Image 1 (tube, rainbow, N blue to C red):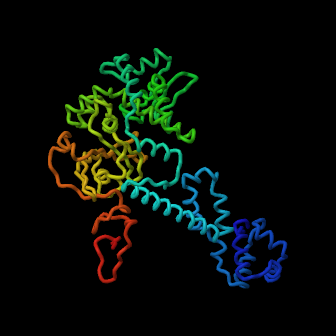
Image 2 (cartoon, helix red, strand yellow):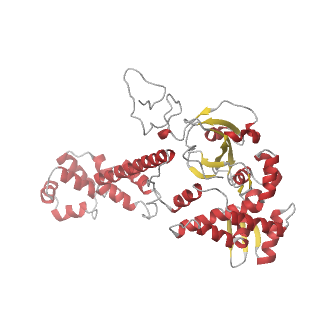
Image 3 (tube, rainbow, N blue to C red):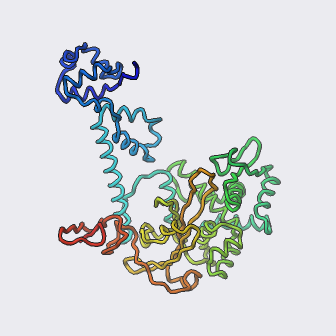
Length: 469
């Protein structure tokens, strides 16, 4: 009759405490010994059907209260411990189940505290952005994970690393790859380091983009990747070997506080070096200026992807030979920011990039199509922005396709020099982010501004669900 036994000790204890009974008094009413009730409350003995019926008849207890799951309490605790700060703390759900069952009020308190923390962190970040836009520095920040530290460091400075550019330009000239860069890189790895590049099928490497096997001296590349991304992975390996001194020198400038932040930063610099190798500075700048920065023409000429060519445009800031100062950002279809960079640093204070009216969000509705807009910020500055979706690694039949969207932009003053600014279009009024934007009657507003009180009025309701005074 094991199926008729229920371990519900913490629930029995809550019932007893709610009735202000001692273990002796409850045990006597149930016809069991106090020691047996103590074992039940510690989940060392089950509740039998007979005891369930006794509890129901003596104390009018709802049986569902004893047999039900922890329900939403457990779900909310899972939400808390899914946060990156806590994700590695628990090996499984067992401890969460015990907390939710044994101390539901404490569990609810943890959830409330966590949600208050997230709301406070969000408000502090918004306030810091607002102060930064007014020229004030604020020592306010959100969660400082290594990836956050790396992102903040890279986004705040120009996306140009002179040592890496010079090293990769010299290496490309010595390599002289002609029209087959991928073949030349494979040949260099084989000749100089005895390293062989192999493309592996999905079943052999289902979860990795690339893997370097030191024992067999082979670099494995996943067949999931496009030819352009396969070339970049090989170029990253070559750059990490041939350009390691320049990468180390640039990495030292950041003075990251943790080893993990340094590791992530090194990866980003190797990725930068791969782009510099695939699209040499002088040749790419000259081609970009002739093509009026048409990304599709550049991707075809250098045999790279749209994303790679767009990234390279933000890197053209060599003193005396600079291109238009582009910036870019990449998001997924849930709105999560994956990457931001800029030729002069990402213009977060002026542009923001979190407005729902930006065409980067509309790009998901028309995959592969290039969308162009001129946008106007509340203080009057204008930007030319170009957005397009990017496809991730090749997905299998029953896998969900990974698709992100990229926005690349520049100050509207450069519009005449860019193919996308040829036609004069009306500017779309946008803001840095809803919490920092004071545009009245915005149909796309998702949050109230932190600078104004809500103007709820029983007699008149505006177009936005967050009207403010």
